Image (cartoon, rainbow, N blue to C red; front, side, top):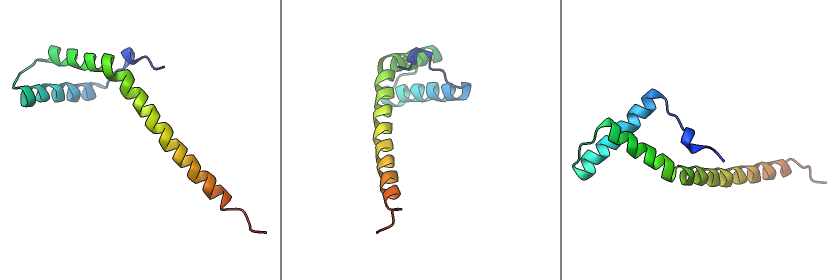
Length: 83
């Protein structure tokens, strides 16, 4: 299992996420929050929801891969010559 407490973002990615969090609080709640509060919100969601999002992404990837492999199998069998 991935250690989600070790998730790191590039500087620009983190700035964008923090800005998005601040904008959300301003637009949806009429509250202005600073960078420290935005970082705490980001950390909270990574800690609480990170594993759920990670597992959901794996589930969806598995379904995509299965469909992809089914298509490859069908393509493979279509190469057979009729006797």
